[in-house]
Length: 470
Ligand code: GLC
Image 1 (cartoon, rainbow, N blue to C red):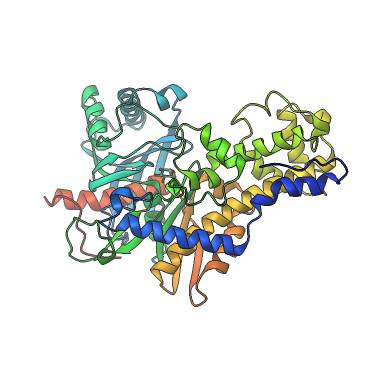
Image 2: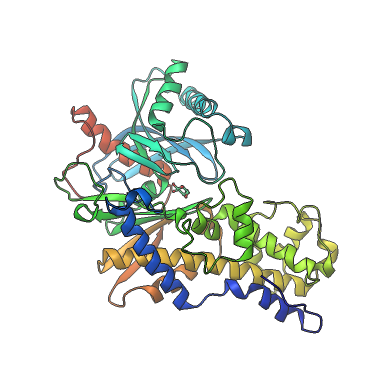
């Protein structure tokens, strides 16, 4: 993309010009929704699934919680901002939860898979010691593993490919539950069995459905982005499981992969393309790279660097930190967008102090940086809305709750409102919806899935074949 030289134009006009490709029309989002629906249908059809970009994995979760779930469960949450081990006690209407965060080093994220799973097993062991759970008998575990997995049953799932910051060797195409059990067996000091493998979107949906029975969609807007929803079995061409009641299954769409066949190229900017090329997985997860927390800060950073090089910001100065890839965190965007003229850009000033640019920062810069952040956020929220509206229009029920979780959605000051507005605009007029924050799906959701699985398991029924739909 060639940018005009801005010699005589006022700075704001020049910045608007740099940002014009982020300010998309309603028709563009409608087009995104139409293509997405088509790609989803290809993923659901047995004939086209192999070549489809959006894989639409059946999850084997077929019923929502009914409130009768009880017991102690361990849960693991891998793939978001933090790795956590959790202990969840389900007591009907109430849920108790304890958890501990364990850091996962960069080395583990891109090292050999055996090391990663040994680390996970050692964290489970540490957690069980802390909570006096060793010797307390056999504990069922729900594993929230937030990566694309092709499942054969509730607790068998092959990693199709790593996404976000992970790239461990020897895990792709392997059953991750088997890898976990092998690591647990290597230690020999913990009596734990993984009874359910689930994506974070599924945990998010289940956790919200526990309180609100209209919940049929779960969306994550965090490090990555993805959605799942309840689909009718007769619309899932790839379904191999039993066809008894309830004739529905949660589909993990893996919508983050949208665009990797070039179908979104008409709206991707030069910055989107540069970020993709520099990423761990070039050509993959292109929708995710325009929306999620792992990339949004980097989009803004690259736009800022471009503006500096055109003399539009910070009196033409950059800093080593601003020039460092991934060093402009997505949380900065939330901080900057919270500022107003009245509080004299207090938060924005702190951000640029951290980046070593405070000497060159004017109030106009603050306003312009805020404008840049707001357009990048707006595009992300509107693209996610195009996805949500597509699912709502497909399910076509009069009043559906969309459960949402993830650090981006939680901490951004306007993401929720932007999504409400755009989803409304893109939705069939006769339909209604709510967007609701789902509290801790990766823990509570995992326990809920594990609870039902465990019940069936202990009854000697293999797989997960619930007959009730709460
Ligand atoms: C990535 C993963 C997906 C996950 C999402 C949100 O897109 O592939 O499985 O749900 O991130 O964490």
